[in-house]
Image 1 (cartoon, rainbow, N blue to C red):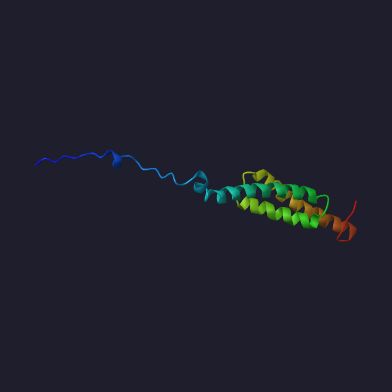
Image 2: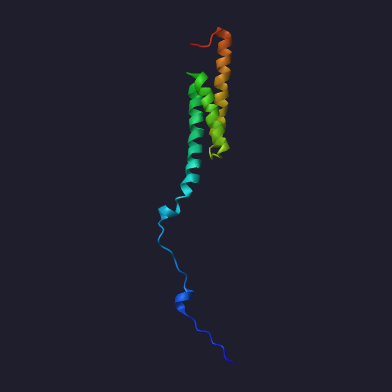
Length: 111
């Protein structure tokens, strides 16, 4: 009994499916990429709004800066320092508001 195997070259070569384009392959990736990019933008926005809130509209900008910093940290931003600064400045906005409200006995304050 002799067994011989014939090798067919067309079946041993890998078949590549070139029907998908790079844009199709990354159709699921932008969700992750966008989330990271959004988190980084939120970290920067919380820092800017917290800094701006020390001067004007701290009753509105302080809580917004705190919320943006918390969401940016929760989403895992690469700019953790800016998110923490935004969180600290948002809290400082509210502390300044409370201190000036106690000094002036009013909700608004001016220089």
